[in-house]
Length: 115
Ligand SMILES: [Zn+2]
Ligand SMILES: [Zn+2]
Ligand SMILES: [Zn+2]
Image 1 (tube, rainbow, N blue to C red):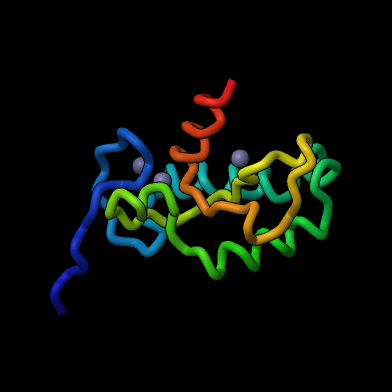
Image 2: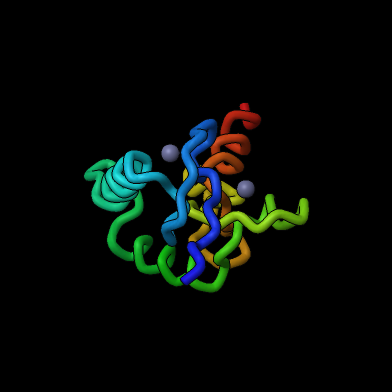
């Protein structure tokens, strides 16, 4: 049996080579799942978006597997975040037209470039 090809851990700057499906080394896989848990279960997040949003988000991610911003640049990066193009705080809606699937780094970039 040939070994599965190893790729560098998806965590930015981590030099470890991995061959598992998550694409993260053991350490970062744990970190990411903790992060994900926090994201999904965070009371503050739930207060803001609620159960309804979690459903929309899950459905949207299923149909938009890759980060739209990376994809536009020819890269396939799994999306981990759903971004509101027009923020809810500015009257944006949880509609597909107002949502964008993004990887965490593109998402952070979008938010940090917005003042
Ligand atoms: Zn790693
Ligand atoms: Zn991206
Ligand atoms: Zn966002």
